[in-house]
Amino acid sequence: MNDFSDKPFHTIVTHDGVFHADDVLACVIAVIYARVHPKAAALNPRIVRTRDIDVIAGGDGVVVIDVGMGELDHHQPGGNGFRGGDTVPYAAAGLAWRKFGNDLIRWLGVPAGSTAENPAEVLRAMFDIIDKDIRMVDARDNGATAVVRSADGKTLGSALDLSTLVVAFNTQGGEKGFTMAFEFMSMWFMSRVRLAFEEARDYEIVKTLDTTLEVIVLPRFLRGLHKLPRHSAAAKLVIHPGPSNTDGDVYGEWVVATVSDNRVPRVAYPPYLRGRDGGVVDTPVGKVNLVFAHANGWTGAAASKLDAELLAQAILHG
Image (tube, rainbow, N blue to C red; front, top):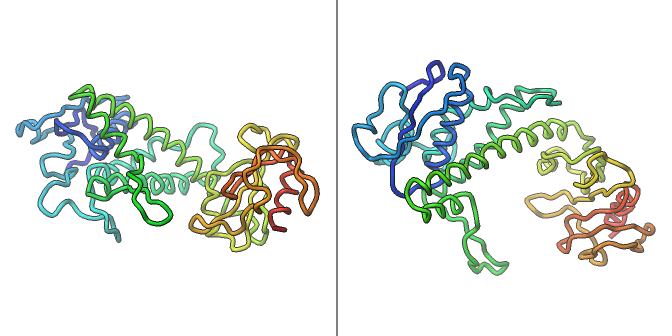
């Protein structure tokens, strides 16, 4: 078992032929780990795809991924273990994340100018958030399916998940396809790191919200809002500035979103509001200048903060 925390690697070896999301993502994780390594001076390791046993044997400054039955492979008899307390076996992505993830996140750090009050807690949460996505990649590589079903249980098809997208690049052929898949996965991963940071940072704020209120008004959208039900049994609606209202202008668009438990809203938009596309609407609490209301009744927006607060009261009124 090689420890690269003091001396980074310069070469990544993985198998040639058909690639999957787990080996591509594992290579992405390894490359970014090397690039941000404090002793690597922006090293950009090369990736060698082969099944030559002499190359796969590795060596000094070489990390071997998804082949060779070593630390970062899962094709040996019996696999390469399960996640702690989990039923999902490790694939290459999870093994690479287990080995490199904590250091990678720590070295990347929180973005410059961050307002995070507890950076260490945010970094720990970032690791866990990204790990959940990587867990799904591992599960798919080990045979789990991503299936979309109708309300009556009929299979409609496979969900367009990360693993499905990456496999499609095999149609481009050989190294060209792998390069395209690697570039795609690299962009996704770094975007996911940024999103994980925002979610972890904002969740620290979510944990401080008043848990006694039915309607919570925020100065901006928080990425960690989906975790609000863990902290508040009372919250039913959240009001925050809309995407076009970046300054939080009281006369700009404001969103009114429902709080859900396991995707079931605690309160839903009444039928007379659902599916509307703007205009002034008469409600039991007064006229509301509506921007839109989703047909499913879980979110909508009003033309001002005051309208949003009235809309929330109309929703609670039913």
